[in-house]
Image (cartoon, rainbow, N blue to C red; front, side):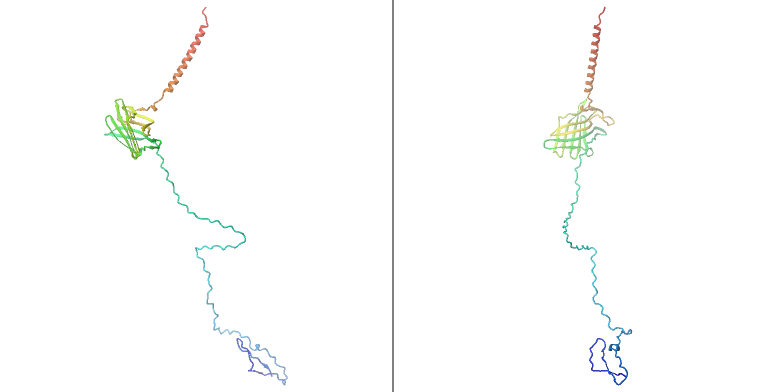
Length: 304
């Protein structure tokens, strides 16, 4: 039989769990039994396994600092990509400057001159029309210092004046000035305009022609001219287009009388007369040649 004795004087090194004791085997030489096989000390103390019924009193330490979360970029922020360095030479990008274009202004175009158009003007004496004019007027300035054209616009012109027994005056008033025509009865056969006054642009351009004898017509007739120009003096010309006017003795139906045309509109028969005379001379020449030829043939025969 083998006895085991615990030697308390054995020193042992501290271990993290429980002390490990060293045993000595006392062999009894007198016993005839084989010696006891001594197992290593660690086999007498099997590896401690955790008791499933016992819960650890100390919970594993949790990290006190939460991992930092990446801060998301702002929604409107734009992240430029990090350029990757390369060995190739990169030409610098051209710097473009943004220039704010000035607002486009539509240029104001000058008002085109109005078309030359004829207007109808009348003067009343009681309930009857005493003077009528259908005329288109244009004033031209021709001087070394200045030149220009002014057109009288009928829709911006009003007629004023008066009619007397032997005189009548018609004044066409517009914003820029006025034009006056004076009609006179020279005798019982003829009437004419013997005074014309022109006043434009607050007196900057003015002319009066007292010696002018224009627009003549018989009493009870109307004067008519398609186009004529009257020199007023001071470099001013009055162009009259599509003119027809009458100052006295209009018809009972307030209409123009018989038309007396201006010289320019009167038919020219000179060409027709010249052609007629030429043909007549040619006929006479042919007739004379014929008669002479016949006479010669008659003279060639002698009587027996």
